[in-house]
Amino acid sequence: MAIEVRGVNKSFGEAPVLREVSVDIASGSLTALLGPSGGGKSTLLRVIAGLEAPDAGTVLISGRDATRLPPQRRGVGFVFQHYAAFKHLTVFDNVAFGLKIRKRPRDEIRRRVGELLELVHLDQFAKRYPAQLSGGQRQRMALARALAVDPEVLLLDEPFGALDAQVRKELRAWLRRLHDEVHVTTVFVTHDQEEAIEVADSIVVLADGAVQQVGAPGEIYDNPASPFVMRFLGPVTEIGGRLLRPHDVEIAAEPGPGTTPAVVTRVVRLGFEVRVEFRMDGAGEEDISWAQLTRGAAERLAVEAGTEVHVRPAAEAAVVPAS
Ligand SMILES: Nc1ncnc2c1ncn2[C@@H]1O[C@H](COP(=O)(O)OP(=O)(O)OP(=O)(O)O)[C@@H](O)[C@H]1O
Image (tube, rainbow, N blue to C red; front, side, top):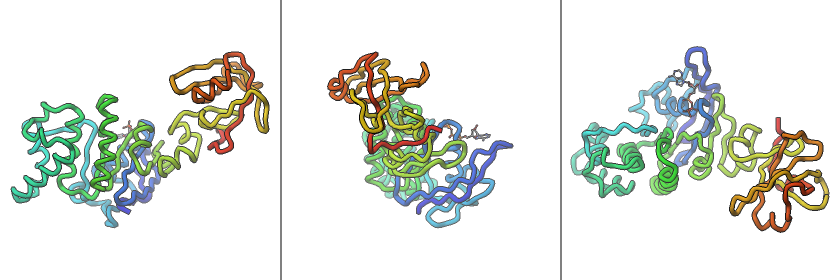
């Protein structure tokens, strides 16, 4: 294990922000801390970095008790959402900064910074100043700088949070590829479930200061531990007191084993996907469930508002009691 967090508690004043948090982060993994705003993600990252001291509990990094070590002695590199570059230094010198402080020989610095700039695709920009870079390029520079001192662990707090959607998507894919090349144990904070699912090997869902579930993206999506996790990871709908994914709802024209009658209230065509909204037999006026169908399936079924249908969860559906 690269990082072991054991029984960490942290309060600010009266308010508990982390409650008995224990997490194992495997060496070489790319882990997302995912959860709603205020759930404690940044605080946990800061406790791992040594920027915040826990009230109780321990943090082990590479098997060593780091709980009382200052940040600079933990072997971690970090990048924050609003990355503060040294404006008066070139890209090269920004990346070289940590190596210079550590008084590495000049030749080594030149070689290492050259390699890193190539890795983050900024080799053309070495002589520019941060103000002459785009937001995405600045974040890549920040990552190169964090990697310069060979950290055992890389900690990223919403590193792409301030960027527009398109750049954010590009950087996600790029971070994934970078990690496949460099294999440094990486933990990143995000409140975006799609980002976590797309990029991470492992997701830690954190809400209300407590770990809700830990697992590979597919595991968490398919086998959520609670209604909260299920709702947080993707769209859900409710049928007969059970939560399930809308693509796991089966709709048929005729009744069958385990089906319940329902009336279609609306059909929304969203390109490839068709969203069929319906009201279950006996449900209240506002109580609308929905199914996500492919366009082909919807055409075969030929439903429109007012059609009577029969619905049930698919045999392989992940289902969680709604409350
Ligand atoms: N230094 C501090 N002093 C007092 N309260 C704090 C401090 N830092 C964080 N908090 C509080 O702790 C709680 C958790 O904050 P934290 O930043 O860890 O959450 P988060 O999950 O990262 O949220 P976000 O996604 O909004 O950044 C919040 O209620 C926040 O207001």
